[in-house]
Structures are given as structure tokens and as C-alpha cells.
Amino acid sequence: MVPAAGQNGDVSFARELQALIATRRAGHEVPRRIEFVSSLPTGDEIREQLVNRPIRLDAPSPEDRWI
Image 1 (cartoon, one colour):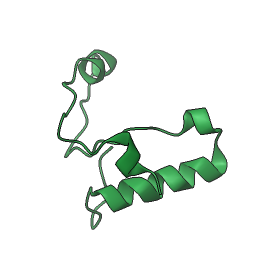
Image 2 (tube, helix red, strand yellow; image 1 turned 60 degrees about the horizontal axis):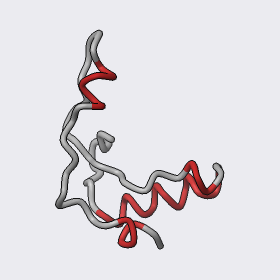
Image 3 (cartoon, helix red, strand yellow; image 1 turned 180 degrees about the vertical axis):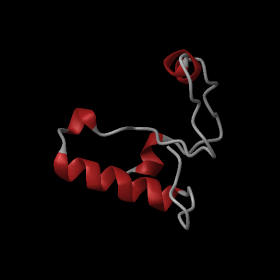
Image 4 (tube, rainbow, N blue to C red; image 1 turned 120 degrees about the vertical axis):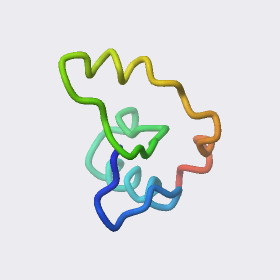
């Protein structure tokens, strides 16, 4: 996810997003991991680039993301 101007990509913002999604979607549709990036790939190979991105191991654990 690319945060909007003025938003920082911290754990509390990730928790807010998960809580918002949980009120509108089924429990299995709430993302367990939210990664904030500066930009997303563009062009014809978007899916391939997103699928092949390395997973950040320093991201908070799923337990830290729930309120």
C-alpha cells in the first residue's frame, strides 16, 4: 500500500486499516500483513512484479497488527 500524503506507514495506521476492513468485510478477507511502500510498479507486468516482490521480514508479526 502507498500511504497518502501526510500519512506515515506505521503499525497503528495498519491496525486502523484492518479494523476498518473488518467492519465491512468477512474475517477471512481482512489482510494479515500490510506493507507500506513509496510506490507501486506500473506497466504491463504489474502482477508479476508484485508477486515476485521480496517479503519484508522486519514487518510486525500478525499478532501485532490486531487491535
